[in-house]
Image (tube, rainbow, N blue to C red; front, side, top):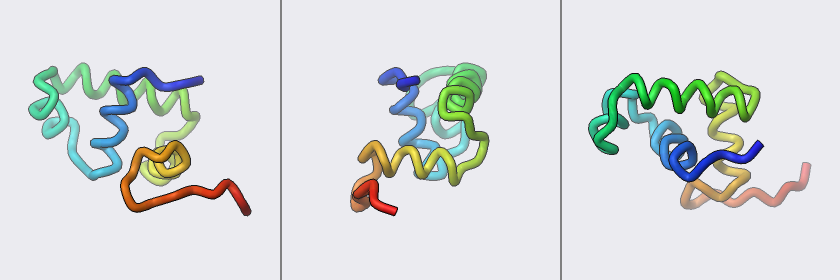
Length: 72
């Protein structure tokens, strides 16, 4: 499943280690909305860990300075 633009935006802030409260303030949305997006992101990516979220963000080129070649 693909992430929505808003989910990608929130994911990029999560991997920058912003809390739900900080994300909510930055995006001018409620903390509950952020938490709902976090839940949906985790379900779509089948992970609950920050490592899993970060791995996805790197693979999708969402983090500056990191490039994923897809090679193992």
